[in-house]
Length: 290
Image (tube, rainbow, N blue to C red; front, side, top):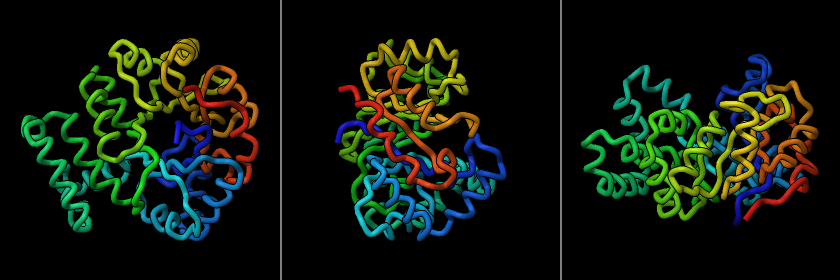
């Protein structure tokens, strides 16, 4: 499929949304029940969503299996909060070993193949070579045989962006397409900067996801710069943080983002107060740029 017009995000399940802490905690607890989350996935699809943007958690994996219908899945990798938590307990190596121990035979084989392809870079400490190994372990956590797309989480994207790591973006774009047969994307909290550098480096991923809303919330370096870069981007840009932490009306902010050039929308569980049926009508606001 082409880049999506509307994705239903499960970022709330990671506990890192910009909504009030208690709201995020309550929703995360409520949707830790896979049956309840599966119901919301079905409602999102009925409301016109093109799929879900999901990080690997046990609840999300179980919900995808329990949905009772195909749910197009866009993987947001890695699950940074979980990896940071595991790293604080056992270090980077310990966190990786924990994932290897929990992996199935097929994942181990794929990890080995990817490791061989990136061996020299890993030995040399190359960031662009190490991330694919982490992605192999994380993608398996979703339990799906086919992914529509793989999106690198903002925490990783923005580290590479801060280092002006052109090779990271070039290599990961091609690796994701070839390895998963899927769209390659990047999530960022520095949208204006990332779009500018991708244009300068002549790199065109299949999509980029970043904050766009009428309040200018999290639109870095400035809202005007973000809108300028969106207008000249040669690939789809999807808007997230539409409600600015729950302070803006979703429908109004969605219309704003599409009207300013966003090709699609990423709406989180918290943005709809846990009711995916509220996505209805958002997919028809605009069309994805070719």
